[in-house]
Length: 121
Image (spheres, one colour):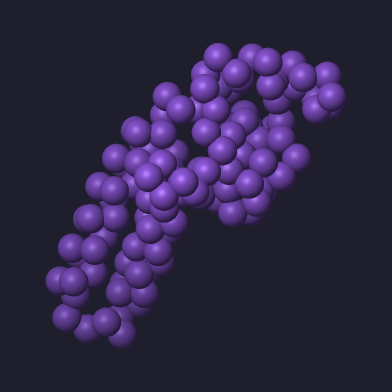
């Protein structure tokens, strides 16, 4: 599941600048919207394998409300693990510390993005 979180982050920060949560019943309508051009983008298919959890159109990323909680829990678990590892490192100048710092930052972004309490989407 956490690979999905990193794919979400990659797409949300590289391919889009707007993120929103979409009710699953709205995906069918959005996918066949004639004003939007093509049905599903290749990026949408690459992100979710075509299961309808994500939709990328123009510069917008839509996340199904069905998977938000799963993604949030996976990001939180990975964040807590990375923070624990980071704190246990003795020498923060090691390359492994820098790599862990990057993981912590990516997980932080995912948590803010997916947490509906912050109204980020």
